[in-house]
Structures are given as C-alpha cells and as structure tokens.
Length: 324
Image (cartoon, rainbow, N blue to C red; front, side):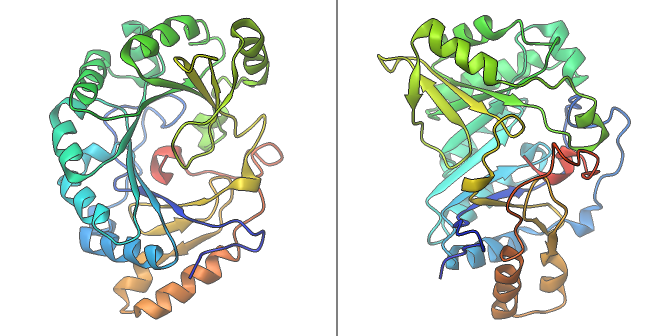
C-alpha cells in the first residue's frame, strides 16, 4: 500500500516532533514570553511513536526526520531513534537540531542509526546570535558541529534563516565557514507561522539565487535528502548552496511529507489547519486497521498548496509547536 493524495503526490516522509520544548527562543519561531507548552501526559510515548511510524511504514513511509522544538531535550531520544531505524521500510532517519546539545549526544545518535543532521545556525557573530536566539549559546553550537563532524555524520547541513536587515550581510562569512567545515549551507525564507513569524524580516531569496549563479558560475545540482531544498553547485562540485523558498517559489506540487506533533496531531500541510488526532484514536483503543483507514482518509484531504501569501493570518500556532 502507498499513501497517495488526490493530487497524485506520494507521501513517504514524516516530520516527527518529539517535544515542543526548546532551549533557544529564536525571535522568528517563538515569542519571548511563550508558555503554551503541551502537558507531558499528552506527549506520545515511545511505544506510541513506534506504533505510528510502523503504520506509516506499511503505507510506504521511507524517511523520518526527528524534530522539535529541540528534539535533544526529549530524554532518551537516542533509544527512540534506534527503535525507529529498526522499523522495516524506514530507510533514512535524520535529525533537525539547534546544535546546543550535539556535543553531549552526538555519538549516541550516531550509534542509534541517525543518518544525517540539519543544524540551525543563523549567524556566526556571538552578539547577533544572542539577539536572534535570546540565548548566549553560539560556542555550544560550534562545539556540537565539530563533534558531529569528528564522529562521522555526513552530510551535515547548516540551516540559515535569511532575515533581511539582520543577518543578510553574513553570506560570505557563512559560505567560508561551511566550505572549511565541509558543511552544506542552506538559506531559508521566513514563513508567517504565528505572530512572531509574521513580524520577522522576510526577504525573497530569488534575487540572491540569480546573482550567485551569475557571480560564481553555479549550476543546478542534487544533494541527498527528501526535503524541498533546491541546490546550486560549483562546476567542480566542491561547493554547494541550498535554498528553501516556501514563499517566493513554493514547492507544494512535489510535497511528499506530513508532520506529527508531540501530542499526536497529524498536520497535513504546514500552511493549513486540517489535521488528524492520532493520539485520541490510539488511546481510545482503535485497531491498527482503523487507524490506517483514518490516516488514508486524512491524506485525501491534504490541500493542494499553502495559503501563506493569501492568508498569512490563518496560522496561529508557532513553529516550535508544529515541528520543523
């Protein structure tokens, strides 16, 4: 069986949020005074997560990305990673992290079978890092990246949210940092997720893509991964730069993913509110067959595209509660 929506898109990628907690408070992601965390008794247990991933795998799921909040704040995450990687059909297990805890947990994650890492890093300047994240933790992130590289994670992708007037003067420095560290840099447009997202300094990446192509002779390329990034590479293949452009050039036509929050809510689209409460189905004693039928029915409701541009006020949930 395969999960295919009414637009012919095969759903084979699950973004799995294991916590809505985070030890940073990035200005574009979470309000500085945010306190609307989910109660721990509402979190999916490891057994419940394993059951759901197994059901999705029966539908052809191949990729799982562990997200948060900050996923490394969930106790025992490496054990959960090992259980997920052992599920038949799961071929690729990756992790999105802010990097503050990588030095401590990197080896356990590697041993558990995590294949790839995406690390959020919007600036290399300590004062600017503190301004954006509201925490003085740049040294921890850099140490975590060094550890991840030393223990053999590859590729390691650096996700830099492009903030007009804030960090858009750091492209050259970030490119040099990633080239020296053998990281893949990806630039990301901000999205109007909640009030904080709508207040962020949005800038289209399209002019930058065009200028970089012309300046460095970059050409279109492919980098392993199941997400929406488009990549430019140098003719010699030694330099690559990715772009995630949900606003200026959306990628809805090829969307292959859904998101599962820590409290068991399946979100069919990041920019729409249609959802399925899988936690309630499991805790009310529904059978695997009944849950599989509910998942299939929900996928049939997956919208053709988001409405971030037309209705930016529509999404009131914050990004940290939804999962990256």
